[in-house]
Length: 353
Image (cartoon, rainbow, N blue to C red; front, side, top):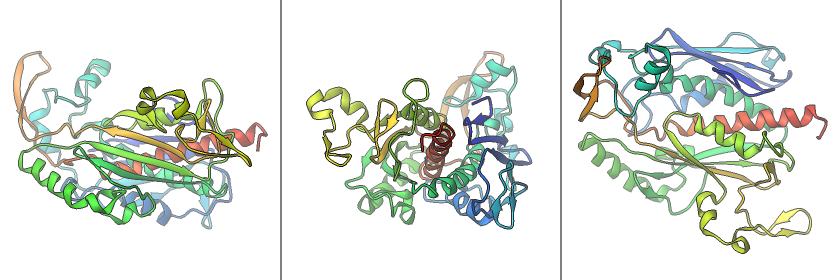
């Protein structure tokens, strides 16, 4: 990994800002011969584009993707795959009043301290629009994973403090909020309307599962699979916590209840470990959850300071999501897929599969 590149063998570099001309990415290390067309990337991007869902921003973007290189006759060539999405609906003037102030909960302060300047228009590089490159790259990664029988799914399991009662990730994208449980959607809708009425925002929890992952992916020390997955998911904006398997509940368990007994034939009696033992996949379903904080842009008065250190009061305008959910759900899926694709190639390069 480097400043704007993620992965070792299957690498994605993203570029662009929220109010710049375009956003996109370059995937390097993808093997040749995989079926890939713009429609494959578009399908993934349509699930995260602005204006989707009751908690979404009113900003409208088609997010139409164009593949610039790396494919021929619908197949990957083994060379870098470049893709781009033009920004179409910026309203930079919405941010004029924020040019010289730091928004609470945002990356403004950190950017200014690090670079001595910042792009105040929609967060610049820290904007959620940067994730377009991740989602498109994730769609390519899933093409590779499919050749090994691996699939990845993500869904919302909690919104605004209301958890699901059951979990079905397979059908989540057909439900509002990409919910893992249809029975809570009505309650979530009411919670969203309540927050909107109060000029507030909501957080939630996203669950990601990877099915068909063979035993043996991941390294025992610094390349632990769970560590790489945690790094990838924590690198998504608004994520403040990640747990694998039982996660924090394991801290309150006993060893006898937390261990997963092995059965004849390579099976397990349970999956408290979330499919990873000693940093290496066990052959079980990989399971992880991520805590997503409420969106920081709220239409309430907040106290802050300006670039000169003087106290000011601001009210953040513009067009913003009420919650990162559900639009962040495809991003979680993409980042997990990128890690697994990278680990799969590493396993093959080392001659272990």
